[in-house]
Length: 587
Image 1: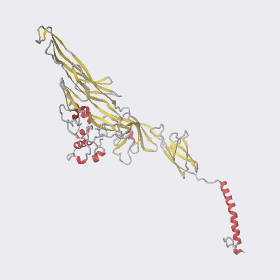
Image 2 (image 1 turned 60 degrees about the vertical axis):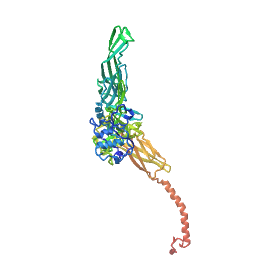
Image 3 (image 1 turned 90 degrees about the vertical axis):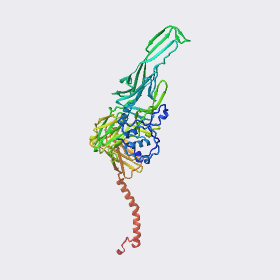
Image 4 (image 1 turned 90 degrees about the horizontal axis):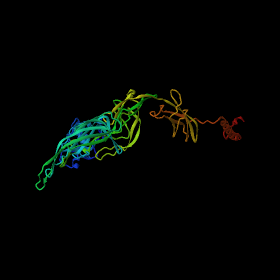
């Protein structure tokens, strides 16, 4: 799925600057002049539609402060809108796109080598010179498919296990000048020259070869970190006739004697190479497990280990996990200008041969869930955990209007859980790499069940200074003690012992109720998987003992009996007028 970044679609405001122009071919132009624009003049073509073509050249300079008011009146078609968008910012794709390969394969055919007296090469080419063979090069145009991953201060070129290397090769022949005066005279001519072979090797092992100035070299079954090398073998043979006078009159510039003629055929071979370090994006080591939950029949969990750098993991047609990476395409500045070299001079022109390269950059700190149901209140899938190495985001060239994250987790494993996705959706998942076309469907083995647990809390002691709480955790179905995980009560936490018990000392006396939680080990890491549980206990009321009650009654009686007798006596002496406790009618 390819989407515009919301800030681009909604407001069409941009933060970079450029004026896009079309290239024209100008002989003897300076490289600086030729490098002022990034869009090839001959696109779109080769099966790349107009709307996509405009978005492949992120190294262009973007124009600041464009808004929807700057949108041309006729920019109603996707191609016109894409052209406007490419002027304002750089475009990110959600997945590796095939358009880069289509463009490279088609544009590659536009290269035309020079003749025997002319070598044509991109400015990026490394030139080699021999005695007769001059300005020779073999330059890797593109590796299809490939993605350059940018992380920290490093860039890594990821390739598919099967693919092709596109390379161009050229050279010129410098035939020595004839000497037509003097006692020794030389005549030179070209007898034969040939681009004998162009070969592709990976760490010294030959993979493919041909003998063309435009070479499409195929490879397969690669793995690891091969160094791909293209080698061109060039040969030349000249005709050299050397005439020597045995009696020469210098003043008359003539030979009075006879000429001795010597004919030979000097030859030369020259080898030129170009190499690129790569890493193969193999997905064939991906694996994972599936887990069910005793507490909820509709809940399913899975752990997926992609085994390599990945772009997305598909659960079903509606749900997928999206990795950290987004993709942009850019051309190589070294191919902006094509150089023609002869014996007499050098000319430069805007190149009509322009390879594009796909790049991957981390645009979010962690993976996320996307899909048609991802925006609902209840997400169809939750990422419980994603773990791997924590890395720094890259610093991109100033011409690239993309802002990666500063730090991200390069997730090598993920734990996923769903309460709404059908359990059989987790029978298989499909892992996609960061190189186009690389994917593997992984069958998930059933690794068991997350068992339900019971937590029982008991307050053993409680006073003004705190309380002692005992926790016991057992399996719900068997009653067996649970010996992994920990129990949390208030701000106290402690692991369970071998009997599935733990006592916690609370530093403050709870008011009436004590709440506790059994925190199980993460099911995706545990050898035996348990679900968490909760319980609540009451502080028992503190009733006085029987002896204390008897003592209280006696003390109360001893204190209040004399007072009661005194009051009654006083009332009696006053004939009941004080309190009315005595009956005066009985007298």
